[in-house]
Image (cartoon, rainbow, N blue to C red; front, side, top):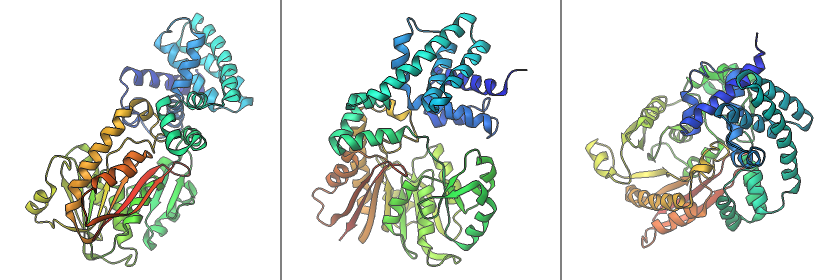
Length: 436
């Protein structure tokens, strides 16, 4: 009977082979692989960890393997080598020999005898070469290779934040993302939380808890309640800056999948945790796409104030007309615009994105952000506030875009501008705009 660990590793290699046939966004791909992941469990955790570690280290792995491979190997062997290299990178030094042995055993199961011998030779050389690169890294180019970031991204961050911060961001992006749950700050939610406390641990962020490894299935029923939602603490910055109040009309733009809408609602009722906020309205808006259904599902869990979900293409449709046709107000006390962006603040969570984006994508995002923000500003009441946010750390998206959108508009001013670099949470950008 085959060794259980060998089977898991072989499945990780097969998963990578499947991905390379049709490289979708990594999270979408993982969710689609029911044949590998029929349930959350140890097998899924192992396969997913190896798969994401390969993606985080793609440039480094490909560069080193190219030195030792005289010709392109068969896809099955190439997948085994990449997965093995990913585990070598993540292994403790005293575990590297064991890691190499485990993957050579995998190659014996799913590759030819000759390929298995090649795998053994290449993997031993890989670990030596990787150690050399780690020890000798000094320049930005060295660290961009070591941390598998396209050089143009590394240079952009160095120009914006300096050498040390650029290296720190790249290093941080190599760490596996922790899973956080935000839990409502209400007596009912805290009581429900006690049932799941053994699967969670506290974080430095208020009302955010870290999920213990391998415990997703244990907290799934908690996520079915209105009390808990999976989201990174970086998502708290924009709703907190918006500071929603009860009795306000609030608009959440680009709202799918709904995590920020739920947080806005929770913040609005902090001073009245058990009552129904009859005169408070939250309108959540996004494109008419499959994500809209997810938004509707999340909004349906807000049962203590009035909520409405609207489909609108903010760049090409007139939201004011749509609101009026729906008998909804066309001006709001508070607006949150979580604008489409380059995702450079969440490359740790979405490692494949670093290989998809190009310099032109950032300038294209900036143009779209300016357009959407200009369309949103007329919906803000006098004396109202709008928070513009992104999950980017690029200054052109977080600083230049809102400034350019407000050019020539005398009754709007930027009251706060901030870029949060990835550290204990994801990176993000926020700007508070007030209408006088």
